[in-house]
Image (cartoon, rainbow, N blue to C red; front, side, top):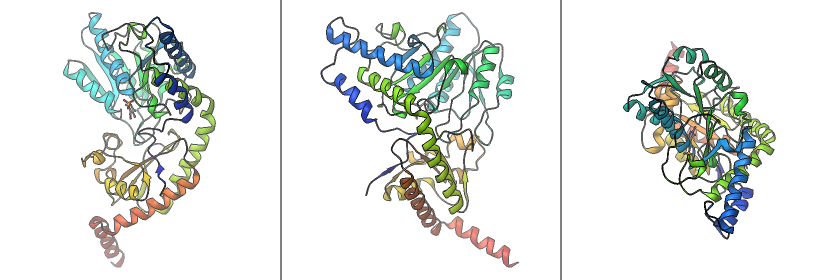
Length: 400
Ligand code: PLP
């Protein structure tokens, strides 16, 4: 049985063209970019070519791109070093504005900063998972040092009003960071048009390998280094460069720039077909997130009277690889913080399935997945006491 992979928000396969460009840097071109010999210079040149490709994809200068080990490191750097920068300047209190639906890389970094004395405002979201720019502006205080709002959500795919937030941040002279891990390589991003000062991204969400990402830092932003050590990345991010990973990320950036429009159209058509079928063919199903401000590849649906973890296991037996919308896949029955923030009742949130489409998926696979989901949901409901109670109650109401 061939597997249908619908978990691209978790990670993507490495694109063959990306691997091909990386391989020489894992074999014969293994030089350390900091050295002075021929091998080193080849590696240093490859790093700079990749930096230029990434910069071109964002409309910024290569000197504004700093390679990191991934999105988590980039988020931690942006948040923790911003707080340190204020302290270094002799500033008193530090206030950060973020949202309740951020990835844990941001939320847990904020919690660490709170323990260290910073004040954090965690904005609520509406039922689609969107932050209100007006509410954000009202939360600004004289000591607000940073606004960190994600570009697109990893669970429900909701795209935030980044441009409006960027304009508000600018008008108040506040640094604006966006976690674009799920958006980078999938949506056109211009850091200048958006008014973003820092942006995090990760290679493994867009066809490059795991363990590589970057932080865009606008020229003139006084962000202290996160890692202490050597002089790599212009003295701001120490540690010998992951040359092959950087080369892979550069190639993925170049490919996504070239193919983005076409891929987005094709993926969104498959997503809409999948959403349409699930909502039409399965009773008590609801779509999570925004209909329109949504990543092309995201389909997050909650099925009442079903446990997401059990559904995932059944789907796995059918050869469908997806994710749940809760922490239940890691053994906890707690619904996700994102779905809870959007106002979903716990029992509905627990029946959530996240299907994320990407490179290589076909309409035929989507139809196979929809058939399998319908079958598995029906099977689980057959043994659900809650569903049985509901049906009995309904038939009593009908006969009265
Ligand atoms: N931010 C978001 C929105 C994510 O979805 C993820 C990963 O899923 C991360 C940050 C962390 O990125 P990485 O896996 O590269 O550390």
